[in-house]
Length: 152
Image 1: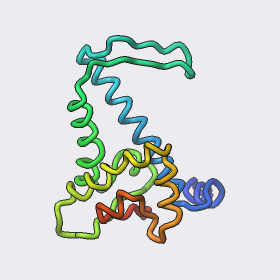
Image 2: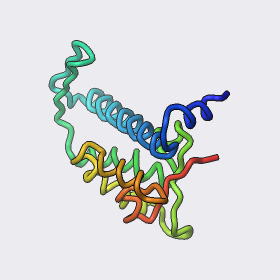
Image 3: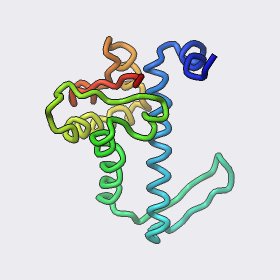
Image 4: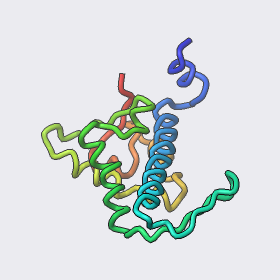
């Protein structure tokens, strides 16, 4: 049995929901790593310590606008160009745009602007929305008129 069959059959109740959760975790881990590396290389980290896995912290003087720029490049721009981020690609997911001829960056930006709603409730709103909607859409997917599907 290959890993995809095993993953879908034994590790998740809903393949799309499970893949989206794992992809989101991977994406935000990568995004955080990029921010930390950028801050370190630009000399913006004022304090960084890593004693063990339970105690990691850093303070940065990086501008908020720089963080937003990195976020836009990693999430909306990558999805508009490649139909997925690194996390989605790792779990064979891609974004489908309902407006086939439109400017996909705007749709992707809309879907990710509403990530703040997910963060406020530790992802529960997004998980419930994906689980309860027949198209497996988050709130941002409804606004951006997108759907995330398994790329086969």
